[in-house]
Length: 264
Image (cartoon, rainbow, N blue to C red):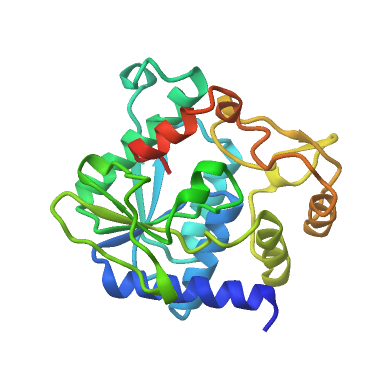
C-alpha cells in the first residue's frame, strides 16, 4: 500500500465506525475539495450508496458555481440532502472581528440543524495541517451541551479505539480526513478523478485555494489550471492554504473562539 492507500483505508474505517456507533448520523458537505473527497470516501465505504444524509449549512453567500455543483451532484450521487439556513450577522456575537463574525453564522446554523435532527454524530472534513486550532482535534471529538468543545478534555485514541459518549445534550464530531495533508487531498483527487467546483483552477492568473463565502474569501495568484498543475504548485509553495480566508488574518484567538463555540 502506498501513502494514499493507507489514508484511504484509515478514513473508510473511521466512516464505518461512525456509522456503526453513532445514530442518527449526518455528514457536512461544504462543497469544497475536502468535503468532496470525504463524500467520495463515504461512497467507497458503503458500496456506492451513502447511508446517511449530507448537510449543507447555507449562509446564502456561496459562489453560484458552488450551488450549481451541489444541485448537480446531489442528483448524480443519489444523496439525501438536508439544507439549513444561518441567522443574520446582526444576531452574532458583536465582539468577534468582522470576518469571524460573518463565518460564525455557520456555527449557529449548524447547531440548529444538530438540534432539529437530534444528531448523535456529525462527520466533518477538517484536517490537522489546515489550521493550528484544528490540529488539537481528535478523530472522534465530543461536543458538550450547547455544542461546546472542551479542547483540554478530550478522550485518548490509542490503537484507533474511538470514544462515543452519550451524555444528554452531547454529540460527536467525526473527522475522517484529520491525518491528510492538502497535497494528499489533491493527489487523491487526481488518482480517483473526483469532480470539483472549477473555482479551484486558475483563470486570468488567479484561483481559489480554499472556498468559503464570497465576502470573506479571496483568490490567490496562480496559473495552475489542472489538477496536475495544482499539485506541482503545492510542491513548491510556502503560502498558507487559508491565505485567502479573511478571518485567518484577524486576531489570533478568533478562530479558536469559533471552534470552541461549535464552528465547522
